Image 1 (cartoon, rainbow, N blue to C red):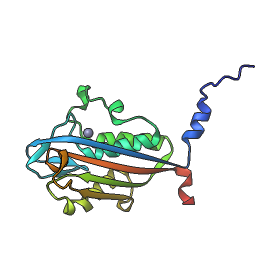
Image 2 (image 1 turned 135 degrees about the vertical axis):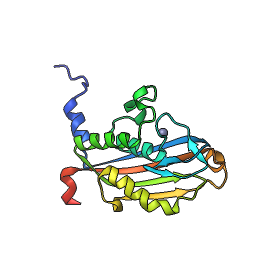
Image 3 (image 1 turned 180 degrees about the horizontal axis):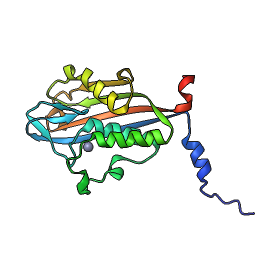
Image 4 (image 1 turned 30 degrees about the vertical axis):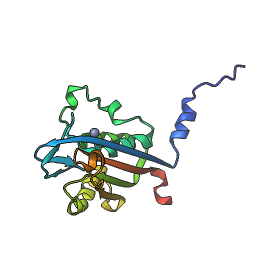
Length: 182
Ligand SMILES: [Zn+2]
């Protein structure tokens, strides 16, 4: 009998069905003079806008990548190539919804989400509660499972010089049947 290593779809599936899975995502877009931009599904008033193929929402892009990463499903660029005309100016909420649908199909739910936005101006403090709600409603979870932090870059680097906005997101997923055990 040949016992060579053969990719076994069943083994792979079992590995994919771990009780919890963790993912991270990050994104950065350049800023140019303009009249505001989308961040976390909200419009942020600013003297800048984001240079991007889609609506350039770094927080939603990082969130999408974090979920895809946790599922072991690659990244947002593979799912929604920026070379495709249909993705031009597309609302980034579509990307999150697609990732959530994949998560549901794989049998996972959101455990919690932790996000960092790096932006020099404007200060986002007053927007954070609304942003939490916005992310929570896109994910179909309670806002208390979502945390949003906003930082400046102390006037250094691309973010600090007001040339870019970026975000990092960590997400924990857990299998749906484990829901009552936690
Ligand atoms: Zn992006």
